[in-house]
Image (cartoon, rainbow, N blue to C red; front, top):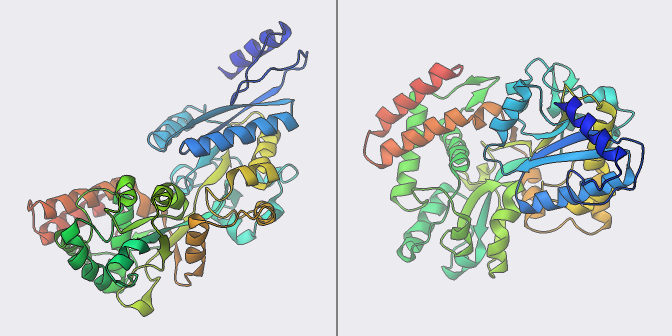
Amino acid sequence: MRSALKCLAALVCASAVTLSSGCGKRSVIQSKTIPTEISLSWWGNDVRHEYTIAAVERFEELHPDIKVNCSYSEWSGYESRSRVQMISNTEADVMQINYGWLSQYSPDGLGYYDISTLSDYIDLSAFDQSMLAYGKMNGRLNAIPIAMNAQTVYINKTIYDQYGLSLPQTWDDLFDAAKVMSRDGIYPMSGKTKSIWMYLITYTEQVCGKEFITNGHINFTADDFEVMLDMYDRMVDEKVIPPNELQVSDITKGLSAGAVAWVSDASSYCKDAIAAGYEIVPVPQTAVTADRSGEGWYTKPATMYAISRNTEHPQEAAMLLDFLLNSQDMAVLQGIEKGIPLSTSARGYLEEADMLSGIQYDASLVMEANQRISLLDPIIENSSMIDMFNDACNLVIYDKATSEEAARQLFDQIAEKFDIG
């Protein structure tokens, strides 16, 4: 397929017709030189698409001998499509990947290209070795993290002030807030299913005094899952959280006075609420007692870039990767939409441009200040496990099973699929 495309490109070039870039339409001056074609894939919202396309067009201007074909979409379906492409060896030369993909698709380190062999084309010195370690599998540098990420609590301070309440620090604070807010149809907290799952892992770790997972072994027992489900049931019953997923419009309309979401999602979730006049602030993570804030919370690379193990043009792919991670053009276009860059070069450009500010930057500072935060094990984000949790929650809140029965089912399902320590 790639050979056919190259032949077609040669014919088109020879005929001196107008070509269009893979990421934006522009005229190409007649030339007998056939540009090297590479591909780039990523996921995100329209804002991410727009600035990435603009960056790629700038890269092509700087490197007229390289043409980049772009493939992008929202997160939904991106992984399944990428998995099929990786199986069929048709994936993009440079691709945005999730941290969990490393253990899932490259446990031996052979699933992606070893980027360390391309150091002549990408400046790896811009990254601390401890950060690059997140992208290593079996000693091979499979991916480079763009920024760090964590689930973070965002509070609508305007609403809390209206009720004369201090910003919540403990789980009890949330229940106290619900007592006064619920009569006006306002929930103190909300979140997507994955965020609530991780939020309740935090609670259960704090109460039961054990980590959910250690060295790939799941430590929770059926009794621990019962603690988790009891807390979920109580939070729904006492109107701390709604019985369904967070809708961004709920934050904007003031129907939710708090949310749990990734640092990388801070702007997309909160910007409309801020534009509507609400003061949204990220706060230290909820704890059993205020002095234990930060326990049971996890961090991970926000997103990562990898190079296909099947690429026919590793040098050009590395040049594009270096541009995406370290260039001034990309740094200014991207800002902190994906978090505070780990690249010292990119961060320096943002400091010079006075762009390190806003809700996402504030959320990143809260994450970085957490001295108790741990590295996230990819198993925690396993979609099958989250679906099992969601099913168990529904059994309890809709009175289809007791929390004990649902917890036993959840434990058995997880034990059948994963390693219970």
